[in-house]
Length: 125
Image 1 (tube, rainbow, N blue to C red):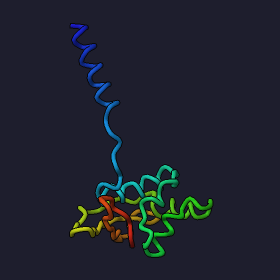
Image 2 (cartoon, one colour; image 1 turned 60 degrees about the horizontal axis):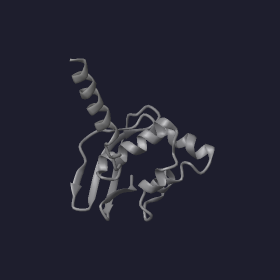
Image 3 (cartoon, rainbow, N blue to C red; image 1 turned 30 degrees about the vertical axis):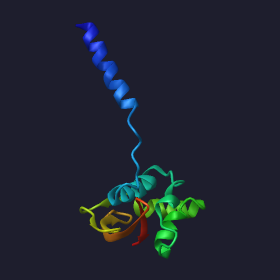
Image 4 (cartoon, rainbow, N blue to C red; image 1 turned 180 degrees about the vertical axis):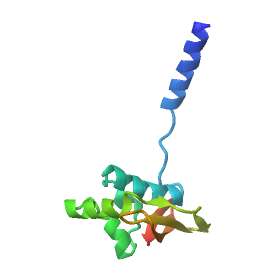
């Protein structure tokens, strides 16, 4: 019996360790959640990869959140309490993701995203 339990636990651990990391750009919701997670954790280094190079100025400010302390603090102030408020609406290579953000997490906004080469990018909000 003990040997069976050991084998089961080993299989669970090996299975968990072999899981592929999730591609945060695989779907629009994941991109939005990655932005909020960066604000919550303070780790803003990967944000630029989530924003389209042709994005609007507000989106580019998200991409530049790690540029200096003031930018990061402002980003965290407005996005740390953010969340996706509805299922994304996807039409071809475009998507709209309704979110709540702001210092108290109640301001309504929409992230507009574009899919390029299979990855989703923030283009405007």
